Image: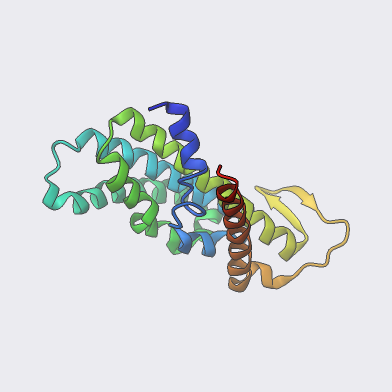
Length: 204
């Protein structure tokens, strides 16, 4: 296996949102802004990479019959670290993300990679897989958050810096409400699936 190919696979083919269609609940809930998307992605990345490494390192010592409970214990340990660090150093983001921080424990992306990849591969490639999947998750959440924020508020403000402001502000408040999340992710998935269908039709 080529490490670079494994990393890119996590961004493209096995992208957790557009490829594996996992982790949709936090994606829909926290992407009201780019800042929230970055916060959730960072927390998820830390947990995913660390749990992948630990599961891979211990895979030969974990009895098959109890592997899922042990995976959850490992994941929950790192989620607790994320929760305490975010609560101590980033209280506004902690408040904004709310219950979705502890719910990282049951994020299908993390449990799925522990079971499908880290439990079958060595530590190095499990680390690379965690990085690739985390990058794919970050890019998609930022894209969805950016679309919703710019259309819903007329600007993108991240960590007190205004990155983009529309010259005219025809903001659509619906975009930062739950219906906006479904409209955005549905539209993006339609585009991705259309492009994949075109590629398959060409024999790519």
